[in-house]
Length: 225
Image 1 (cartoon, rainbow, N blue to C red):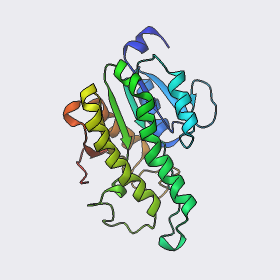
Image 2: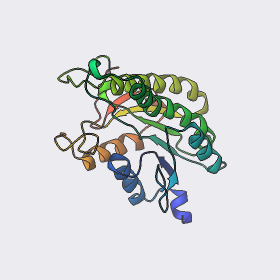
Image 3: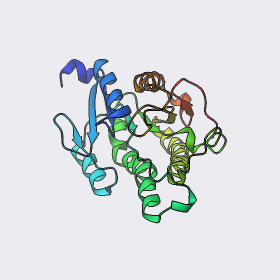
Image 4: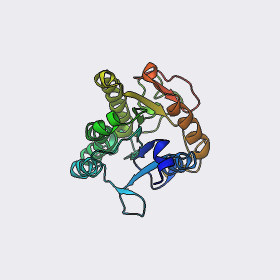
């Protein structure tokens, strides 16, 4: 990390080994920021993080103690079962909730001191329109109960964190990346990952306390809760 890179700020991104997380990491690195790329598998210039493991999250916070972080992007997520109510399994459901809804809260707690030390102070939860009670089933009949419930829970986490973190000057937002062509979204998805990431980055870079507690799509549209 050069001094000029440090001066431009630091962004931490979970699930940065591929897909949207990797693309966001590349965009921020190209913009001159220090990127803390977090992923399950050990890799050069990356932080090992298993968001399904509370101990791994706590260990990340310990390793980063004292380091300012301007932006935290909770991107890591899993889809889980998509077969509908008939194939709903307790273990799968709880695992999806643990990774998609609980882990961002544990990371917010672990990295709160880092955000307080940063200049931008922005916490981003990569959510989904699938978790919107108003819009989540419009033109969408997928049977992914766990994923939808987890993203609805994550949206409430955003609202609650925005309330709790406002006194610290930390803005917290939910963002919908769209139906993106990634391993999770599939080859038939409507949006290229580069287009989604560019839109998300523009929103993140413009986020202040005035936007805290908001839910927007990659194209700037406000998503109904």
